Length: 423
Image 1 (tube, rainbow, N blue to C red):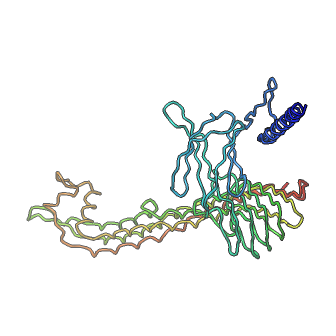
Image 2: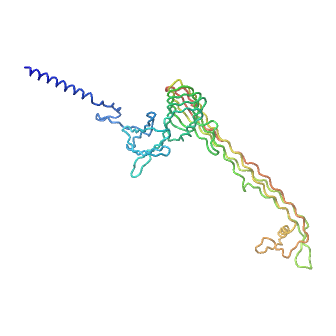
Image 3: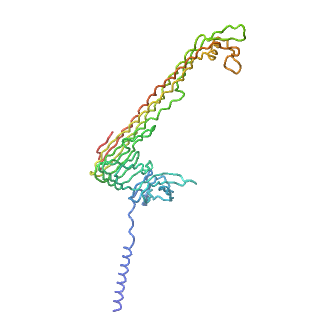
């Protein structure tokens, strides 16, 4: 009887142990990850679908950036990274939602070039330039556009912290894109496109301010956002005077009048001057100089949409067009004409006299009258030359360039519109 009791007790203990081990095994199983939000469901099978219509990127955190590929891209992409000339090549696969992430290392801008393999060639699909997450203290004016060589390949700028000292400026020039400031501390600071007095180079139009989407999440102080077009360049210098602007030469003085002296005892004819020659005419005044070039137009202000999520930051919005450039001064007038030569009362005048009387015979290969048997018995004193002509008048100045346009910008506080300018 005792043996039967021991057997029953043993079986009960064994059964309890098995149940305990089964329970422990169940508790040791890994917890299933949370389900991905359902975007499409077919026959109870959950699958994520890439619904991105265009390429974009965003910052996951301080150390990571995520790229979203359009749904017409292949899943596998060849990516080339370039940081200050240091190149690296990556074969990446976007997840089913079209996302791929990469770490942000360093403080330099990184260029990402996305290629797809098409046949035997790599075809460039997209290229973007990603800035590091910024933590800046502005104690003196900083041109962010020049610092990072901003262009249309940079779609977003993220400031973890931005501190702007009293009346200092953060310049972004013609940058267009999204600017996110997680924490702002500004003492009458400025976020500004172009300096007020900046002018484009001569002969160049002023650049437009960009189109920015500014989001200030938290912070304190006051900030002025100035959307300002660059001032237009002055007109190029007028053309220097050339031979086309030179005045005509003065007229030659009237030639002397000669009279033949009868000479029956010798061969040939002698002449004497009976009317002295006239003085040469003055040169003609040069022509008016070439006109100056018109000034170039100023740039448009650009526009900003400003979203503020804290009442501790006060933002003032200013929109200003770029002014047109000045027209350049007209060019210097043309050189005056050369003086006219006075009559010489000698052989040159005699040549002209003979021609006028149609008693001139021209030798072959010459443009002078044949005076082999002609001589001058009495000459007249030569007349003086005329004066040089005066310099022409200065050319007309160019017209001033047209100003740019003031464009609409708006400020929102927690999605409620506060104010718009140029609405």
